Image (cartoon, rainbow, N blue to C red; front, side, top):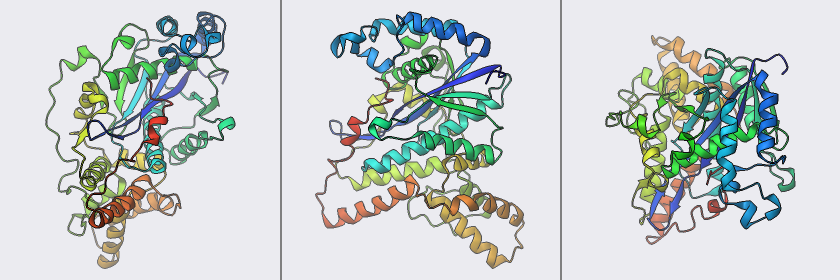
Length: 424
């Protein structure tokens, strides 16, 4: 890494969808990846300055500090307090060029009552967010080719998650989506500059969930925000949102139906099927899953933004009328490493038409290219989160028929303990 001109330091913030017992509504979730970009010649001084501001200590966690952990939980960690957040943010900002940081935000995550499947869906959203982040940083002026990730492995708790990111990065490099990059996964205790991406992720989570821009406004950790699926530049800060004129969302692909779980694709034009096979209808599919979840719960009253956040709603509104291009959709599919149920159906229909038409279709070459690029993923034994959701939505529908008063009170109670990365 000695020869690289700059390094990206990576952290995350997220909030899984969950059923709000008080409002009887499904709170939508998000996954976001934070990248703080530091020029290589600034790294030694930045590292030293951060540790000095932390009174020489090697441990920092913004969420704990905001809760005054050093006062209420462990006085021996006296530096881990709310009043130390802004000084650390200012130190980090002194070594980072304005608006050089990048933040990718994913707000289209299906809801399920099953914790394990929800975790799978969150990992898929992370993979898409990470791939988009890498594309933005490796293909811009002053590109970044070296990254330090905060490790998510925790041997003491028998939790090993870094392999997910390593697999995602390997796939998108192998498929030529990004050039070769260098990566290291370490604890923020070993690399204090990771505190800066933790601070940025935490402050951005305050903005997204709590409509609180103050921490970002008063620090030097300013970012450019992008939607993880469309790569649309997002205006999230108050002064930016004032200029927005948001339109009512439109469908993602012309001629495409609302993609319910049992949608018949046989009447669709081949071009539309090719787009769907590549994943252009991912958000339509997510909305269909969430609509099914609402229908399966007689008490559910609708979908809401987390904490009814205006910023979250604004972020979604800025992208819902933007299509996911076929190329970008295929990149996201490769990043996830699997196909959704609707993609599988589209490919099956394309294969059927290919046999029926004997290769005479004008789009046969394009079809074959798409199918070849997806063949390896299709053979993967790893189930997709959406496939599991579809299976359980069908099971829920059967339960609803057999048990009219079936309630989903147990959904995601365990997720309330799944707090790491929530940023609050």
